[in-house]
Length: 339
Image (cartoon, rainbow, N blue to C red; front, top):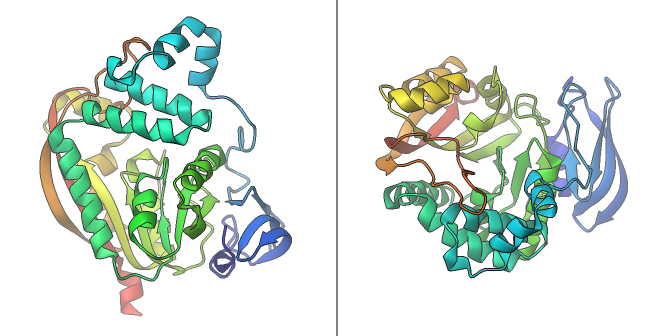
């Protein structure tokens, strides 16, 4: 993480002031450190350049363990399946297996082959309309932010799909965030391989209890990240607390009369942020001024299953053909505006 973040951060548990003990720092990047809350004595380490700001209440099961993924473990136990996945021409695999091959290459540190396999998979996993609408939202956000000086905080970054595009096309600092430090460790390697790491910081935290001071964030983004946050509770209220500018949330919404997908959405508890009406109600109730921008509709289909990894699917939704409404939710903090 970069040193400029120190002035933006506080204890995510009690909002107390942090006292920093620098252990290893390279110019403006902190590699190893400890931040101790002056109020509650909670300790938040920086390890391998990643700031770890999960509260004591958050699970810390696999934070820094070098634990292989379930996919790698499965292939180790079934070498014949690994050969079918990795030792054949890429174009002989179905899209899901191409993406699983990309994931294996990433875990092996072969990011060039991983990008090639992922690009091939993407074309077969999603409909042209899905890809077109997704890319349209990315272009809109990048154009909207073209003049920003940053930093841009990206929420629930996952594999850093949006972060990589921001880093490629904007000349400003960016912060990638995720609940899982293991995910962020992989992101660091991915960004280093792509030559994008210099302008990116990595922070692990629970989005429902962020480590940012009130109003410290001028620009917040997310790429389909909101529905991935489990039991969101007062998530949007917490985000309003830290944002004094704009929140650009790339989103897609399901039709409310889509019975097949509605059942799965309901069973997973995702109704609040996967339907347009309820998502807007959630934003407004949390005190945001929100508008739907750049909307477009595109056909979406269930991602086709793997063959080598028989029946394995990439995405849990949709489970049936549907039409998704894509957009960017452009939200500003009404409380900040009134000050």
